[in-house]
Amino acid sequence: MQELVGRLTALDPEASESLKVIAYFDALVEGHASLEVLLRGAAVLCGCAAGFTSGAPAATGSTNTTATAPAASTTMRVDARGQRTHAGETPARSPASASEPWLTHPLPDGGRVWIERTGTPHANDAMVLERLAIGLSISLDRSSPAVQERRALEILLSPDETPDARADAVRRLRLDGVPLVRIAAQPARDSRDDPRGVVVDTAAGRVRARILLLDEGQETTSTPVGPATDTVKATSATTRTGIGTAAAPLDLAASWASAILALRMTSPREPVLRADDLGVVLLAAEAADAGRATHPDVEAVGAVATGARGGHDRTTDALEVLDALARTDSVRAAAILAGVHHSTMQARAADLAEALGFDPRTPAGRIRLSDALRLHRLATARFD
View (cartoon, helix red, strand yellow):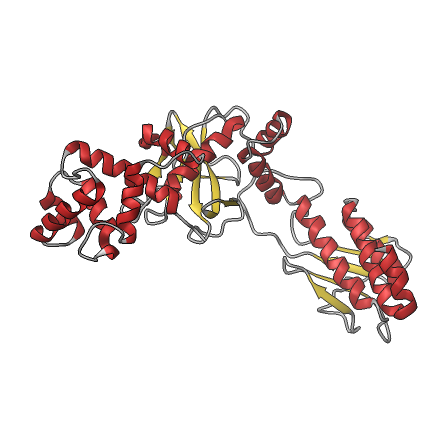
């Protein structure tokens, strides 16, 4: 950066000054400068007073408080000497109400930053305002209780964090003393935008994670602990959801891993799937996800789904027919579930038995088909 500034100074003094402003605020942000220090830097650079008003944060239901986090809309001002002005020292003014044409810049939370320049703006006033706004946004974000709790949840979801980091995250989420919790995983594109949840990039796409509490072995319906928690009944019955196995808060990464596997094995007919209900299929899913050899039954289901096997050139409903056969104990019941005529289902079932290499109309065949369908969904699910 300094080398680039030196080169630009000879070519374009104003451009080099802009780079110096960027480097200055970058250094303050990297050093975790406070809100007042950031304002003081802007005031000193501009030679005039600078201030900001934050937007009022949305209510999160959290009882947690952080000393450095604004509890409501906050206004702060630093004069041209770099001294903070306190209530009563100056008339209450803001860019919206002042008669002076102050330069302003919006903050992401709805607030604004400004510099109190009178007369013609200087060349770098706009750049100072922009970098000040970025720095203040980062500082406000760092001090937000909701952000700290989301980061704590991210730590608990990662199997690579240290025990000390995980223990601190448990305390931040106020889960000390809570014996068991679960993770619920939903596609980020389909779940409600909740700042209390955490969106994670996975092999299947972006997934939102939330904590579910347990009450004597059952999920609670109305007693979340902190803003990073949710309940099963808050989950829509049509939103695909994987619910992980129960785990101690320190071992939440295991529940998260099983929740992701369960989510990837959901279907339109089974949108909510609990990892506990998968039985030995969960172990098979873990092995398949680890990249071990694909079972021939899963390959056969994939071939039917793509039209490579099965006949009749009716691949659009092939998986629906397979699912109906796996879920019912007779061809007639499967026909009703799939919404086709009994004779049509009989013909399809015979073709599919040949394509699969086993008969899905038998009890053993239905179990094989059900397991193969789950693992096929695991391999093909995408939530982009």
